Length: 424
Image (cartoon, rainbow, N blue to C red; front, top):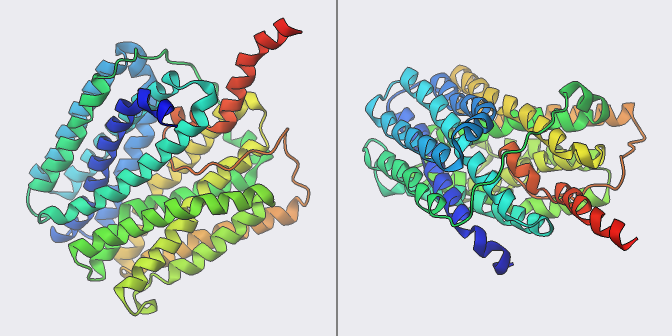
């Protein structure tokens, strides 16, 4: 494993620095926004801006990389991202933050695309699954660690914004210093959402509703913790517990989904997620330790929904369509993530902080009903070819899906064909 990771260490270091900066900023804005007396509705729309930018950047990334190359694209977007982080402290108004979040999201998704496309090009096909697993561990580990930086200084000071900005800027160092040449940018074919709905409606439903839930988790969970009276350090631990829970439970849940009907497993996941979400309501826990345990349980279940949806979709696709199908599913998830913070923020503004866990429960409960309904409609769930293997993952850019082990198997088949023909 070390032999496979050593050549891409600089790229993993770059994405770690990026995630440390962006993860810190995400929580910092919720805490600082609360101190600035922004309404929950305003903070919800601000947080949605990031996912809107993420959505926009997905379409801008590849054309920009083709035009100026990987290094120049990374340098440009790192500069834009770093400056936009600092400007949050300069213009502390809801409207300014909304625009800056769109700008930050756009810059960061392009930065992630550069790194992920580079990872794909420098990783042999037979090792893509291992690299993908390491990349997901780096993602969740960096996001969990970044939450602890919030305790280093008051949210009202410029220091934390400066730290987030510096981390984004420093990501330039390992990426620009890599000794590997930039890869060629491949054109990816697309599959329509209607087509995917016809073959795997539960996967599409799960992607959308998971986006609604996870967008609200990333955007509003720190605000919720602030609203129920937790200190800055406790807010960081609260968010960290949710992320760690998501990292720990994905693999055992995934193994379960490989053995049984994924729709049934998915229905079970979201049913328990809905129940665990209600345990986060202030009236449901007696101590802050129980609150941490409850958010860890919810995170463990909620984080598993999207990767199970990906595996379920791959069960119904030919090898040639895996990357295109995964990209379409990611698009649906991104739409939900862009709506989630704004919708949950509106509900919190109307009824109070407790609306967030109730929102989580409602979204997961809706997915449970959809899964049960679709299972009742289609008792026989046929797959195309061999069933997929569950892979723990988080929402990332379409480029990272090329490292998915099922996609890697397709690369292996393509590379082995000439030698097989020669031996035959």
